Length: 297
Ligand code: TMP
Ligand code: MG
Image 1 (tube, rainbow, N blue to C red):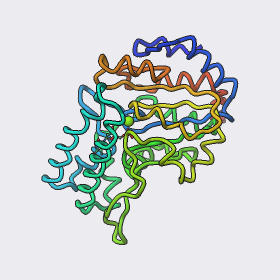
Image 2 (image 1 turned 90 degrees about the vertical axis):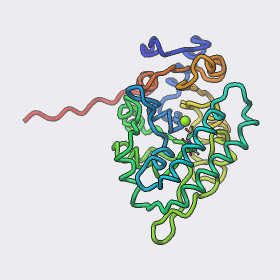
Image 3 (image 1 turned 30 degrees about the vertical axis):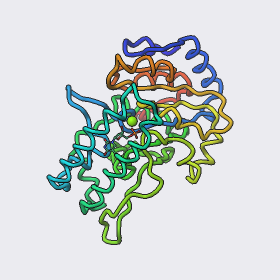
Image 4 (image 1 turned 60 degrees about the horizontal axis):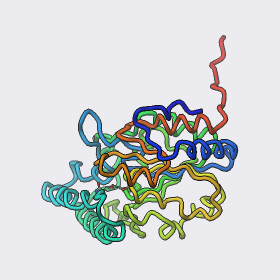
Protein backbone atom coordinates (compact mmCIF):
# COMPACT_ATOMS: atom_id res chain seq x y z
CA UNK A 1 0.00 0.00 0.00
CA UNK A 2 2.70 2.48 1.06
CA UNK A 3 6.16 1.00 0.50
CA UNK A 4 7.83 3.76 2.57
CA UNK A 5 6.32 2.17 5.70
CA UNK A 6 8.93 -0.60 5.30
CA UNK A 7 11.76 1.87 5.96
CA UNK A 8 14.02 0.95 8.88
CA UNK A 9 13.16 4.22 10.66
CA UNK A 10 9.45 3.35 10.93
CA UNK A 11 7.91 1.96 14.10
CA UNK A 12 4.24 1.24 14.74
CA UNK A 13 2.47 -0.19 17.76
CA UNK A 14 -0.43 -1.42 15.61
CA UNK A 15 0.36 -1.68 11.87
CA UNK A 16 -3.09 -3.08 11.09
CA UNK A 17 -4.76 -0.03 12.63
CA UNK A 18 -2.45 2.27 10.64
CA UNK A 19 -3.49 0.47 7.46
CA UNK A 20 -7.17 0.96 8.33
CA UNK A 21 -6.74 4.68 9.02
CA UNK A 22 -4.80 5.21 5.77
CA UNK A 23 -7.56 3.39 3.83
CA UNK A 24 -10.20 5.58 5.47
CA UNK A 25 -8.24 8.74 4.62
CA UNK A 26 -7.98 7.58 1.00
CA UNK A 27 -11.71 6.87 0.86
CA UNK A 28 -12.48 10.35 2.21
CA UNK A 29 -10.29 11.90 -0.50
CA UNK A 30 -8.71 15.33 -0.78
CA UNK A 31 -11.96 17.18 0.00
CA UNK A 32 -12.17 15.89 3.56
CA UNK A 33 -8.47 16.04 4.38
CA UNK A 34 -6.37 18.61 6.17
CA UNK A 35 -2.79 18.38 7.37
CA UNK A 36 -2.01 19.85 10.78
CA UNK A 37 1.72 20.14 11.38
CA UNK A 38 4.22 21.41 13.87
CA UNK A 39 7.11 23.34 12.32
CA UNK A 40 10.44 23.22 14.22
CA UNK A 41 12.06 19.77 14.10
CA UNK A 42 9.00 18.38 12.27
CA UNK A 43 9.07 20.17 8.92
CA UNK A 44 12.67 21.25 9.53
CA UNK A 45 15.62 18.92 10.04
CA UNK A 46 16.83 18.08 13.53
CA UNK A 47 20.42 17.57 12.38
CA UNK A 48 22.70 17.62 9.38
CA UNK A 49 26.20 16.12 9.12
CA UNK A 50 26.24 15.40 12.85
CA UNK A 51 25.32 18.97 13.83
CA UNK A 52 22.05 20.24 15.25
CA UNK A 53 19.94 22.44 12.99
CA UNK A 54 18.40 25.61 14.44
CA UNK A 55 14.81 26.17 15.52
CA UNK A 56 13.11 29.39 14.40
CA UNK A 57 14.09 30.95 17.76
CA UNK A 58 17.71 29.77 17.38
CA UNK A 59 17.93 31.48 13.97
CA UNK A 60 17.44 34.82 15.70
CA UNK A 61 19.62 33.89 18.72
CA UNK A 62 22.55 32.97 16.45
CA UNK A 63 22.25 35.96 14.15
CA UNK A 64 24.62 38.92 14.01
CA UNK A 65 22.02 41.37 15.31
CA UNK A 66 22.05 39.83 18.81
CA UNK A 67 24.66 41.18 21.23
CA UNK A 68 27.27 38.83 22.71
CA UNK A 69 25.65 39.15 26.13
CA UNK A 70 22.15 38.56 24.74
CA UNK A 71 23.31 35.46 22.88
CA UNK A 72 24.87 34.01 26.03
CA UNK A 73 21.70 34.58 28.06
CA UNK A 74 19.55 32.94 25.35
CA UNK A 75 21.93 29.94 25.18
CA UNK A 76 21.78 29.58 28.97
CA UNK A 77 17.98 29.50 28.81
CA UNK A 78 18.09 26.85 26.08
CA UNK A 79 20.50 24.68 28.05
CA UNK A 80 18.37 24.95 31.17
CA UNK A 81 14.87 24.54 29.71
CA UNK A 82 15.30 22.26 26.66
CA UNK A 83 16.20 19.17 28.78
CA UNK A 84 13.03 19.87 30.79
CA UNK A 85 10.94 20.16 27.60
CA UNK A 86 11.92 16.67 26.43
CA UNK A 87 12.32 14.97 29.84
CA UNK A 88 10.38 11.70 29.52
CA UNK A 89 10.07 11.39 33.31
CA UNK A 90 8.21 14.66 33.97
CA UNK A 91 4.50 15.22 33.32
CA UNK A 92 3.13 17.86 30.94
CA UNK A 93 1.41 19.59 33.88
CA UNK A 94 4.74 19.86 35.60
CA UNK A 95 6.46 21.19 32.46
CA UNK A 96 3.80 23.71 31.44
CA UNK A 97 4.64 26.60 33.80
CA UNK A 98 8.33 26.11 33.10
CA UNK A 99 7.71 26.41 29.37
CA UNK A 100 5.77 29.66 29.93
CA UNK A 101 8.81 30.85 31.91
CA UNK A 102 11.23 29.93 29.07
CA UNK A 103 9.21 31.56 26.30
CA UNK A 104 8.54 34.68 28.38
CA UNK A 105 12.21 35.15 29.31
CA UNK A 106 13.40 34.47 25.75
CA UNK A 107 10.85 36.85 24.19
CA UNK A 108 11.76 39.57 26.71
CA UNK A 109 15.45 39.21 25.88
CA UNK A 110 14.78 39.31 22.13
CA UNK A 111 12.60 42.39 22.56
CA UNK A 112 15.57 44.29 24.06
CA UNK A 113 17.78 43.64 21.04
CA UNK A 114 16.43 46.27 18.63
CA UNK A 115 15.77 43.67 15.95
CA UNK A 116 14.50 45.16 12.70
CA UNK A 117 11.68 43.61 10.71
CA UNK A 118 13.90 44.08 7.68
CA UNK A 119 16.65 41.91 9.30
CA UNK A 120 14.63 38.72 9.24
CA UNK A 121 15.13 37.71 5.61
CA UNK A 122 18.91 38.01 5.95
CA UNK A 123 18.93 36.10 9.28
CA UNK A 124 17.15 33.20 7.60
CA UNK A 125 19.46 33.32 4.55
CA UNK A 126 22.58 33.17 6.72
CA UNK A 127 21.26 30.43 9.05
CA UNK A 128 21.81 26.65 8.90
CA UNK A 129 18.10 25.90 8.87
CA UNK A 130 16.99 23.13 6.51
CA UNK A 131 13.54 21.83 5.68
CA UNK A 132 13.39 18.03 5.77
CA UNK A 133 14.34 16.20 2.59
CA UNK A 134 11.33 15.87 0.31
CA UNK A 135 9.75 19.11 1.56
CA UNK A 136 9.05 20.37 -1.97
CA UNK A 137 7.07 17.22 -2.88
CA UNK A 138 5.17 17.56 0.41
CA UNK A 139 4.19 21.22 -0.02
CA UNK A 140 3.56 20.96 -3.77
CA UNK A 141 1.43 17.83 -3.49
CA UNK A 142 -0.86 19.42 -0.91
CA UNK A 143 -1.12 22.60 -2.95
CA UNK A 144 -1.97 20.72 -6.16
CA UNK A 145 -4.66 18.70 -4.38
CA UNK A 146 -6.05 21.82 -2.62
CA UNK A 147 -5.54 20.28 0.80
CA UNK A 148 -5.07 22.90 3.53
CA UNK A 149 -1.83 22.73 5.46
CA UNK A 150 -2.15 24.23 8.90
CA UNK A 151 1.19 24.93 10.57
CA UNK A 152 0.73 25.26 14.33
CA UNK A 153 4.01 26.40 15.83
CA UNK A 154 5.41 27.52 19.15
CA UNK A 155 8.31 28.98 17.18
CA UNK A 156 8.45 32.48 15.68
CA UNK A 157 5.86 33.01 12.94
CA UNK A 158 7.75 35.78 11.13
CA UNK A 159 10.84 33.56 10.88
CA UNK A 160 9.08 30.37 9.86
CA UNK A 161 7.08 32.17 7.16
CA UNK A 162 10.33 33.55 5.78
CA UNK A 163 11.85 30.03 5.70
CA UNK A 164 9.02 28.60 3.61
CA UNK A 165 8.91 31.75 1.46
CA UNK A 166 12.63 31.47 0.66
CA UNK A 167 12.16 27.76 -0.08
CA UNK A 168 9.47 28.73 -2.62
CA UNK A 169 6.71 26.67 -0.99
CA UNK A 170 4.56 29.27 0.80
CA UNK A 171 1.52 28.37 -1.29
CA UNK A 172 -1.96 29.83 -0.65
CA UNK A 173 -3.17 26.60 1.02
CA UNK A 174 -0.73 27.19 3.92
CA UNK A 175 -2.08 28.75 7.14
CA UNK A 176 0.14 29.54 10.10
CA UNK A 177 -0.69 30.07 13.77
CA UNK A 178 2.43 30.92 15.76
CA UNK A 179 4.12 33.57 17.90
CA UNK A 180 4.24 36.72 15.81
CA UNK A 181 6.54 39.65 16.45
CA UNK A 182 5.18 43.10 17.17
CA UNK A 183 7.17 45.96 15.60
CA UNK A 184 6.86 49.68 16.29
CA UNK A 185 6.36 52.29 13.54
CA UNK A 186 10.09 52.33 12.83
CA UNK A 187 10.08 48.57 12.26
CA UNK A 188 11.89 47.75 15.54
CA UNK A 189 10.82 44.71 17.57
CA UNK A 190 8.97 45.78 20.71
CA UNK A 191 7.41 42.48 21.82
CA UNK A 192 5.41 39.45 20.79
CA UNK A 193 1.70 39.26 20.15
CA UNK A 194 -0.70 37.33 22.35
CA UNK A 195 -1.51 34.55 22.93
CA UNK A 196 1.84 33.05 23.78
CA UNK A 197 2.18 29.61 22.20
CA UNK A 198 4.61 27.18 23.83
CA UNK A 199 5.14 23.43 23.48
CA UNK A 200 2.34 22.45 25.85
CA UNK A 201 -0.59 24.74 24.96
CA UNK A 202 -0.94 23.81 21.30
CA UNK A 203 -4.69 23.23 21.49
CA UNK A 204 -7.99 25.04 21.04
CA UNK A 205 -7.37 27.44 23.91
CA UNK A 206 -5.07 29.39 21.59
CA UNK A 207 -7.01 28.60 18.39
CA UNK A 208 -10.50 29.68 19.49
CA UNK A 209 -10.04 33.29 18.42
CA UNK A 210 -8.16 32.70 15.20
CA UNK A 211 -9.63 33.12 11.74
CA UNK A 212 -8.57 29.63 10.90
CA UNK A 213 -10.71 27.97 13.56
CA UNK A 214 -13.84 27.69 11.39
CA UNK A 215 -12.01 26.18 8.46
CA UNK A 216 -10.30 23.78 10.82
CA UNK A 217 -13.63 22.23 11.73
CA UNK A 218 -14.90 21.57 8.20
CA UNK A 219 -12.20 19.06 7.24
CA UNK A 220 -12.82 15.98 9.32
CA UNK A 221 -9.95 13.73 8.19
CA UNK A 222 -6.59 14.67 9.60
CA UNK A 223 -2.96 13.90 9.06
CA UNK A 224 -1.14 15.24 12.12
CA UNK A 225 2.65 15.71 12.11
CA UNK A 226 4.68 16.49 15.19
CA UNK A 227 7.89 15.84 17.07
CA UNK A 228 6.87 16.55 20.65
CA UNK A 229 4.29 15.03 22.99
CA UNK A 230 2.75 18.53 23.08
CA UNK A 231 1.97 18.36 19.36
CA UNK A 232 -0.64 15.64 19.91
CA UNK A 233 -3.32 18.13 20.99
CA UNK A 234 -3.00 20.29 17.85
CA UNK A 235 -6.18 18.77 16.34
CA UNK A 236 -8.29 19.06 19.50
CA UNK A 237 -10.27 21.96 18.03
CA UNK A 238 -11.71 19.81 15.23
CA UNK A 239 -15.13 19.01 16.63
CA UNK A 240 -16.49 16.42 14.17
CA UNK A 241 -13.29 14.51 13.63
CA UNK A 242 -13.69 11.30 11.62
CA UNK A 243 -10.20 9.87 11.08
CA UNK A 244 -6.82 10.96 12.32
CA UNK A 245 -3.37 9.58 11.55
CA UNK A 246 -0.65 10.84 13.89
CA UNK A 247 2.92 10.75 12.63
CA UNK A 248 5.63 11.57 15.16
CA UNK A 249 9.28 12.34 14.49
CA UNK A 250 11.36 10.97 17.36
CA UNK A 251 14.57 12.97 17.09
CA UNK A 252 16.22 12.95 20.51
CA UNK A 253 16.69 10.56 23.47
CA UNK A 254 15.20 7.87 21.23
CA UNK A 255 15.57 4.83 23.50
CA UNK A 256 14.01 6.52 26.52
CA UNK A 257 11.14 8.14 24.67
CA UNK A 258 10.24 5.26 22.32
CA UNK A 259 7.59 3.68 24.56
CA UNK A 260 5.72 6.94 25.10
CA UNK A 261 5.84 7.90 21.43
CA UNK A 262 4.59 4.48 20.30
CA UNK A 263 1.62 4.78 22.64
CA UNK A 264 0.73 8.27 21.44
CA UNK A 265 1.64 8.37 17.74
CA UNK A 266 0.31 5.86 15.16
CA UNK A 267 3.58 6.01 13.24
CA UNK A 268 6.90 6.88 14.89
CA UNK A 269 9.83 7.90 12.69
CA UNK A 270 13.11 7.42 14.51
CA UNK A 271 15.98 9.64 13.48
CA UNK A 272 14.46 10.05 10.03
CA UNK A 273 15.41 13.42 8.53
CA UNK A 274 13.09 13.01 5.54
CA UNK A 275 9.43 13.47 4.69
CA UNK A 276 9.52 10.25 2.63
CA UNK A 277 6.99 8.34 4.72
CA UNK A 278 4.59 11.29 4.86
CA UNK A 279 4.94 11.81 1.10
CA UNK A 280 4.33 8.10 0.47
CA UNK A 281 1.14 8.22 2.52
CA UNK A 282 -0.05 11.37 0.71
CA UNK A 283 0.71 9.82 -2.68
CA UNK A 284 -1.53 6.91 -1.74
CA UNK A 285 -4.33 9.05 -0.29
CA UNK A 286 -4.50 11.78 -2.90
CA UNK A 287 -5.39 11.35 -6.55
CA UNK A 288 -2.25 11.91 -8.58
CA UNK A 289 -2.48 14.78 -11.03
CA UNK A 290 -0.71 14.20 -14.31
CA UNK A 291 2.58 16.00 -14.64
CA UNK A 292 2.27 18.66 -17.30
CA UNK A 293 4.72 17.75 -20.05
CA UNK A 294 6.21 20.58 -22.09
CA UNK A 295 4.77 20.56 -25.61
CA UNK A 296 7.17 19.50 -28.33
CA UNK A 297 7.54 22.06 -31.12
P1 TMP B 1 7.45 23.74 18.26
O1 TMP B 1 8.37 22.86 17.50
O2 TMP B 1 6.47 22.98 19.08
O3 TMP B 1 6.79 24.75 17.40
O4 TMP B 1 8.30 24.49 19.40
C1 TMP B 1 9.32 25.32 19.13
C2 TMP B 1 10.61 24.81 19.66
O5 TMP B 1 11.42 25.97 19.89
C3 TMP B 1 10.61 24.05 20.96
O6 TMP B 1 11.07 22.74 20.74
C4 TMP B 1 11.61 24.78 21.85
C5 TMP B 1 12.31 25.71 20.92
N1 TMP B 1 12.76 26.99 21.51
C6 TMP B 1 14.06 27.41 21.22
O7 TMP B 1 14.80 26.72 20.52
N2 TMP B 1 14.48 28.60 21.74
C7 TMP B 1 13.69 29.40 22.53
O8 TMP B 1 14.12 30.47 22.98
C8 TMP B 1 12.36 28.94 22.81
C9 TMP B 1 11.46 29.77 23.66
C10 TMP B 1 11.94 27.74 22.27
MG1 MG C 1 8.69 20.85 17.12
